Image 1: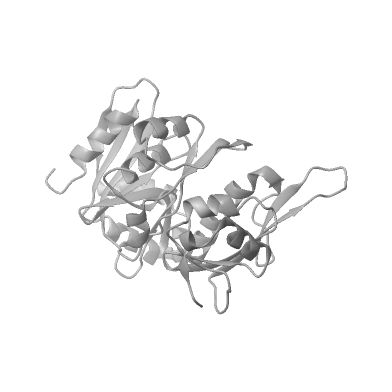
Image 2: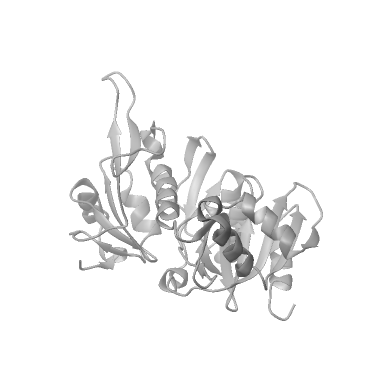
Length: 307
């Protein structure tokens, strides 16, 4: 397999690969093969994955092979797109215009599934000064907006969706990918980081309007650099609230993390123990806030070795 930066390919070349034998895409330690006949994936890939390695003549082993197929159930029905992962479809079919979000959601699912030997937490995660900041949170907590604000300024993006913790050494394995932004978060990040490169919003998805921010080149280039967990912060966005935080014991943080972990039950007692070891030296907090500036300032002040 001969790979080159996706930036060296034109959108036409990407589209031809997607419509043909597939586009080989290297995402951190994962190699995927992507096919798509929807005609709506080459442009966002060209923008968002420009610093990733890709191959238009795929051969050999891939961690996952995925195919986005457009179809309609009857000639008078609207076109739809479905996500196929080696013969199975873990997602329902969606309107054709939602092909790119479906690809990103599907790739998250593939990475999580292929990481079965490690602990996988539904959480954003960034790094600074050699320590990872884990940001778990339920929908609406603001974790992706906060992740984008940090990753597009002073922190290194490790992932906006999945914190993968090695069972071997307890370090976070980076999988930097485009950062998902929803609804009002899109304009918030545009204002906070005017230089951010975002895709045009895809509207009327089941999550509302969705746009994706291109990950910094430095994060993609450093995707081999695993780091230990230094901080665990549970953010909670409450409109109009003054910032308030509470230190958590590691036992309290571990209990909360278990609620956000995909596969710790499958890993059994060793999965629980490895997660506990991974946060053994971490500082843990719950933070309520009402605006992005206040939480970013708090993180930059609190989550640093000298704090």
